[in-house]
Length: 145
Image 1 (cartoon, rainbow, N blue to C red):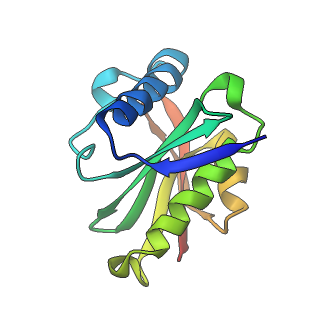
Image 2 (cartoon, rainbow, N blue to C red):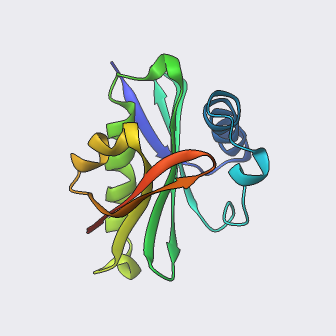
């Protein structure tokens, strides 16, 4: 199975990842669209995953005052269980590692409970108490580069 992950560079790719996020978060998980799209879209580095050339998933990362936040990991239902999530996490971590400003910075995310085992494979550990975000339970997970 050919999984490809690339950095979003075109308006067309950006439209595709917003469509994936709409399907996964707004429709499937019933997240308020006002919560899903934020002021960080332009300052984030976005990724598009494809399987055999078909759009499959997305993620983004950005610098924050606390370190580097990995977020908006979404894989379309019909593409789950094929390694797309792992390919996305690996691509995001690899990309962050290429950034000089990322050295020694904390990587963190707000992980939905079903995705925690995926992130743990990459060395992320849960920190603190479970919390609710957009009516979905999460843990913060962290690691260093």
